[in-house]
Length: 141
Image (cartoon, rainbow, N blue to C red; front, side, top):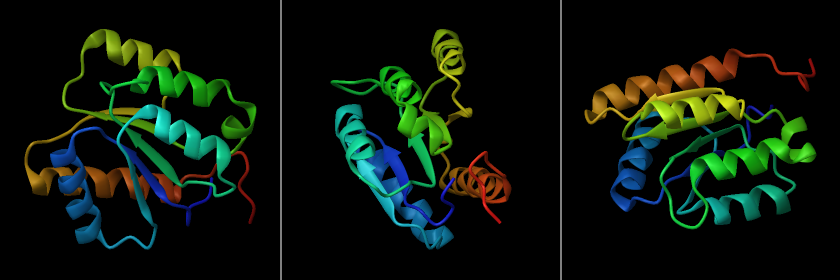
């Protein structure tokens, strides 16, 4: 896990992208924030870049390649799996089948986006700080 790598946000809703951008601006993490509007764009980036992202926040319902399909492709890709990139779902709703599907693809968390800016900021802060303190298989002292 590259804790100084970019934070990837895969979100097709422009309003949600703007709110998340403001949350990360407020939290002032040094990581670059990279947004993708759909799963295909994100997959192309993840498979073609040499940069190792720190964490992925993914919506579920997206055009072209939804979050569950994207997670499956990331999980099945040996190179991406070995990078130990935490993959989290950050969705407006948590339908039971989506949660079951997500965890069956070894997702590291499923979170419902709070509608309140301060609650969302607190949630993102807790998530990022958890992963900043976590040790991964490819951790080197």
